[in-house]
Image (cartoon, rainbow, N blue to C red; front, side, top):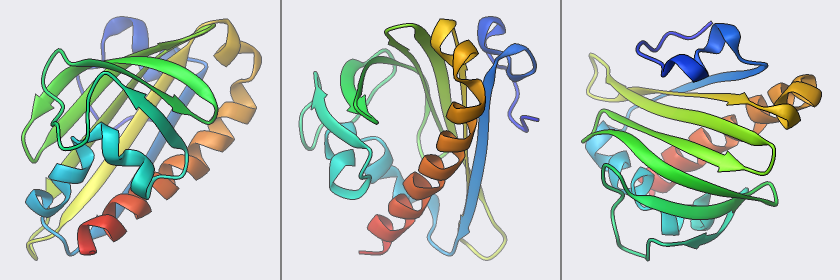
Length: 156
């Protein structure tokens, strides 16, 4: 079940065939991690399942309404940023052949000055419906790698 509120109705986790929730806690504060998260062109440097980012260049920050495309797990996804609260939240809608999704990141400050990072994704459409069990399993693994890569990159 999602801990995040205000999902777009068409992407509510309770009604989607695919939902993934991952989180990690780090001693790094959100401002140390935020630049890597909002520089999509640089994701391939630290997240192995991202490649061929187009429409936003290296060193360019994502912004509300930004649209770009990229490959993840070999699938080209067109993505539009729908939420952006600096150092706190980033979300986007994505479309790929036979699939639509919503992906959200939230960084929660912790008492020790670090943060707890939560990432959740919903996928709907014919492909997620047909491959739901496999996609849920893969997203759980790959999103954890993405979180770990973000933290490692922030520590570098």
